[in-house]
Image 1 (spheres, rainbow, N blue to C red):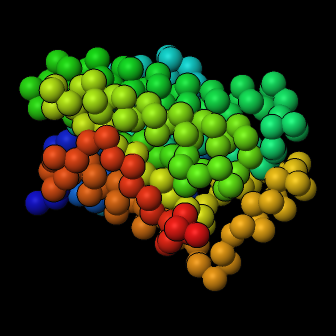
Image 2: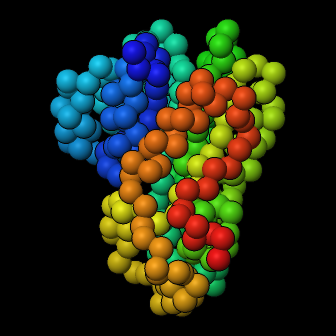
Image 3: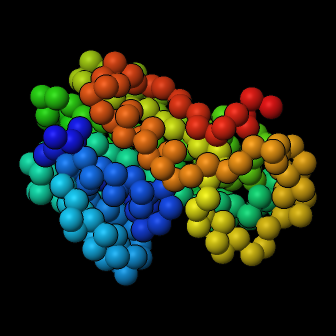
Length: 254
């Protein structure tokens, strides 16, 4: 028996890194997982990896900044499982470590769309569905220690992740009477592909961030984040909502 046998789960940003591992771990615990990302070929590989797991993974290719995708992925989970039990908003992008004087309107809008607007649209649809379910449901947002500290990324990324923390707390408060839990995890440095494509990084931004980084603390692993996400979404944490869970090996204590 898995903790999520028969559960309907949606995981965004599932083509690589933390989202990839989170989707696999939910499927290993018996869930029917709708894995969402833009890269259909990577999702196909994920589905193949999960073929022998107790649950299953269904690929859903799309852009999470578009309501057609966020609504559609939730509908797919309900279609497959009969209900939506867990939404994990994991999709996110970096911002080249650019401080505010170097941020273009284009960069700001792009980061906000993926890191904040996308999760909001997914949460809106998920809550609408969960309100009609006797047992409510769970939302786990993936932010960053950049969502609780100002010295871990550029201005756009930092602002977007702080906003996700606030959105999480408000949603948890508003829907607590409806058995809808909403929590946020804030990872520190994790070995993923999120830095790929960061080719125009700000020298000032990188220099300032690195100057305050304790390099004696090793980077985390995707399983460190996934195990926390699954715990939070499980009945073991049924009284936990509105929490910000920092998973950074102690980096933010500095």
